[in-house]
Amino acid sequence: MPDIDDSDEFGAADLAAHAHARLAAWWAAEARDLPWRFGRATPWGVLVSEVMSQQTQMSRVVPYWEAWMEAWPDAAALAGASTAEVITAWGRLGYPRRALRLQECARVVAERYGGRLPNDYDALVALPGVGDYTASAVISFAYGGRIPVVDTNVRRVLSRVFLGVESRGGAASARERRLAADVLPEDGPEDGPGGGAGDGGGSGSREAPSVVWNQAVMELGAVVCTAKAPLCGRCPLADVCRFAAAGLPGLGERRTRPRQRFQGTDRQVRGIVLDALRHAPAGATLPRGRVEALWPDRAQLDACIASLDEDGLLCIEPGGGLRLPA
DNA sequence: TTCCGGATGG
DNA sequence: CCATCTGGAA
Image (cartoon, rainbow, N blue to C red):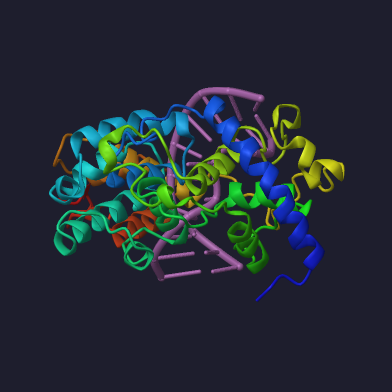
């Protein structure tokens, strides 16, 4: 289905030609040297980096990723770890359910795919903890495949540059997805899959234009084209950006819902409980008395413990003591 | 005080 | 739609 606004389509395609070259040059000069970039990580390592990065700033992810990959270099290794080890190693990255899903994912990859991460979208998106974003990111960044990668940063950048408006909260709109597909550069015949990480000798020298574009758009959104305070003075696309040309209308107006505070929420309580378990001796049970001292609101505490139990993040012993799952 | 690379599963 | 986690920086 073609875009309703034809003039917009042609305009976008025109801007894209400039944007591709500008962003590629910017990426070559400015990309942060993260350890899973430039062909230095296996596809599995790239997947781990994406899962960790979904929830945490890169600067905090890097040391966790390095320790994690050293402990469990591939899916088979992670599949063989105990759940308690995995939860402990996840540390304070946050959203520990994702650590469990990553291990479930590793077990599926190990058992069903012989330890090799699939390289097709349908197989990837069927893995535990892998949705559209992560599947696309793995195909592009790890396998060098040509596919749009759409996360919040990408939506914000593309919407600003090509449409001149802020992207809206909630799921990506059909128009945003179409835009991401429309402006994705074509890859030359010699730029096909395989140029990325994983196979290819690890030089990481030449990535396909679509791969560079995907990474560069995300990077631009992370460090320059930020939500509330974009650094247009340092943006390689500033002179072709429709949002800048329009005077940044409605800058930062994106969320429909005000952000939930953290203090006093179940999320904080769950974090406190899990952190106590991480610091208990390996395999030990945290006695009920110690558990009750963790949070003054007994009803909330017990509700959170029950939800952690349901999530598989801890086990409740008969006397009310808690321990990490085996 | 608000913001960060908010995606995934229910 | 809704819940999920953390801590440092701006």
